[in-house]
Length: 164
Image (tube, rainbow, N blue to C red; front, side, top):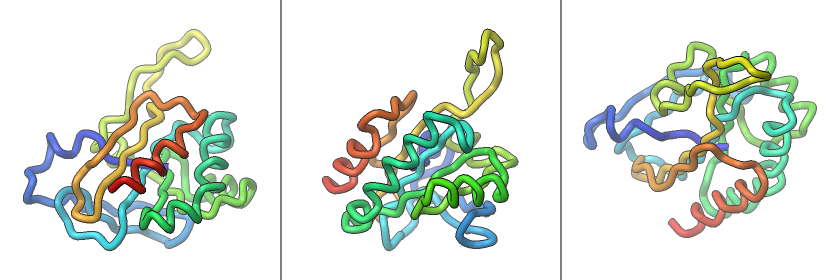
């Protein structure tokens, strides 16, 4: 899954944006966006909610391609507003082999402008727009996908990562 959308408009090119979030791998993850040196290409995917059909299928696709992402020097990270506890259960149930970040305070979601007005069962609500962001090793946003359709998405992100 992938992250980074609007930060180039919000942070000067010579500035990094740092964040701390809970995760399923570490108690907390610290990462930087912007033009910061990185050893691998972060691939962030924002998704609406754990244990929903679309998010499950998307996660399974990224899971199944994890070795190929690793060979492409790309780290897959899923991001949603769910809690670390929810993420842990989702990750275990689906045998996900990548980390899920808990953005409960919506800082990352707002940074990447993925909170959008959505229609859910006839009601308008603010929710996470399924989005993926590919950042190169220098911290530069190379590709973003908005309003993602799950089918074939992980493979498309992999091809973009391999091309960098």
